[in-house]
Length: 345
Image (cartoon, rainbow, N blue to C red; front, side):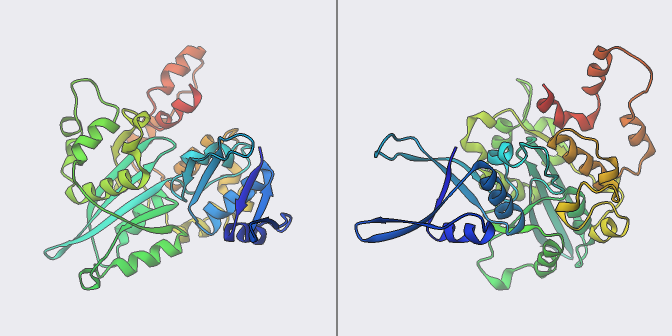
């Protein structure tokens, strides 16, 4: 396949990838700059756009023939929504990604309390995680949750009136910068959330979101952030998503608090993504994964260390000998493998 980019975007790509030459098309006295890339060059550019400068990307394909052009969109991606380009980004299993998915955060003042509603979504693994809690003006709990979930992108409400802006928003924006998380303004709404989740979630025929997720049902502030995620990703517009997602309540108190300072101080991960496979860091030392999905799961385990010994024991797989069928059956009982079963099967 040949990949092309036109106009000012083409000029940007020549600054990212100096080996690509800027060319010119001329028609009717008008000039149009463009670049032509191999698949390998396109993957390099795509990673830089999404992970380094945190741009949104739209990919078009020409379905026409000869001089008859018929361009149609075949995929859109942003730092937190990589589902459309995952096969391109990680096809060689050489690129470890310490962050994944996107999160939507709504902060409200209810009386003397500051209530935070958070929804995390990984569109690749098809999972939602939701939580709601009371926080202090420094947003210490929210900072811990963000570090544990490690999203690539964060959705924030559009503030039309600066006077109504929450005083802690500036604090949170600094937290996002510190963790290198892209910030995007989006529309937050809680309309039709229950009906939308009835379609999106993996539910039995007689089940609904309201009667199967009662704890999440009570998180009214977090419903706004869930609405923002559904609309931003356009999940409801694709019927292939119906009945495919899993929703869990994220409980940060189950995990040790690991922020960016802790990661660097303990040598869990390197500062540069290019050093991710060095054995001098914990991730590189433990990493024997053969797939990108396995690496992302290992990163999640390191970033979310359990503190409850009973929870840890429930995840330990017995080393006793058994048949292959026994291990397959056991894998379906371990919570952390739920997200990767689909990739294996």
